[in-house]
Length: 194
Image (tube, rainbow, N blue to C red; front, top):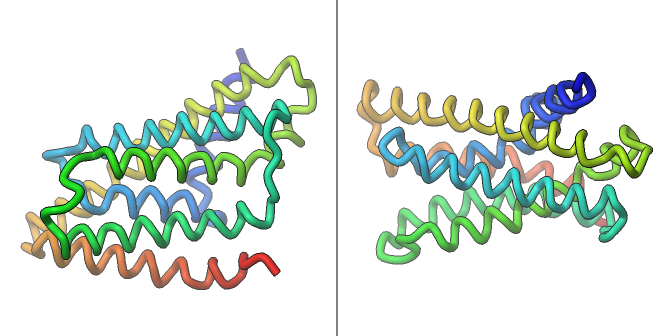
């Protein structure tokens, strides 16, 4: 049981690590269009992300699927960029994509990419093939808890900006998404596969 909590803490640290801020950027981009009124939608998306993240992590940990690490390292900032661009595009085209289907599918794919990105580190930590399920579940719990924390923080920021400072939601989404896109561009450059 102590190992389970160790990996839960590892999952928390994995997402909340400011030196490896790709998860924070992605989750922030994912949560920006939402408010407390529709908090369940963004928590649903974060859960989809966790499940697919852990699925690809498990597939890689058990060596069922292997992926080129340099490609995955590049695809992670691509997912962040696409999420930010989608936020802005959705504002410009209010009639399209009213449902959560596209958002859910994209989030699932992005979760797979991010899970493969962490798989090498996870494999080094858990060398015993038979002991990978418990650590994987603990890690998944840590990821989910940390994602709920990030989503909550973004929803609080959205509330403060939109309700207290009276910034229109469209402006908040555009500015916040643009900031995330600008932060992501150097990541794209540094991880571009040569």
